[in-house]
Image (cartoon, rainbow, N blue to C red; front, side, top):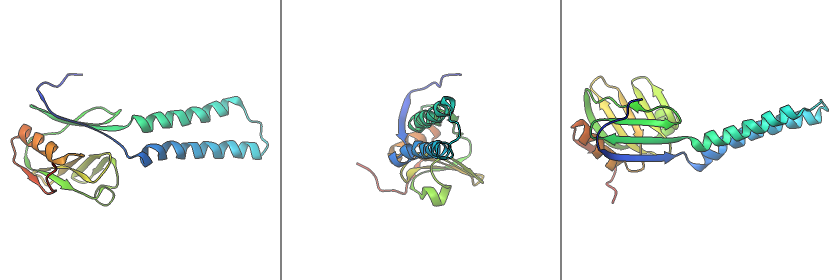
Length: 172
């Protein structure tokens, strides 16, 4: 994979909220417990392989839930984002009409957190309700969640050569 060139203007890592990071492994563990309990209560022969598989699934679920994070990187010549462990996604700079630091409603506007793709809109977010919205001339937009939307908007605006719009109060 080709390494991006240029000075890093902004970099941010966000982890999912604790209830998300723990909810996934707990749900998998609950399902595993239900399978174990059903096998034990029905007096079926219970093998070590089943136990190892169930515990293994719990460990994998825990590792995945704690490994997921949103990474955003703005360089002098490009902007990219990824939900780790997935690959980087470049953000296109052609036909950008506005860059806005915004407050949004994750569930109502995009269906939750993570990578969200809808008609003429995409969102990459991990937590909170603040981010940067990049609007394109064709009416589509991309939202990148951020804990510092003003700083991210300024960095993207500098890279894309557009004046940022701040729809959220400036942070100190």
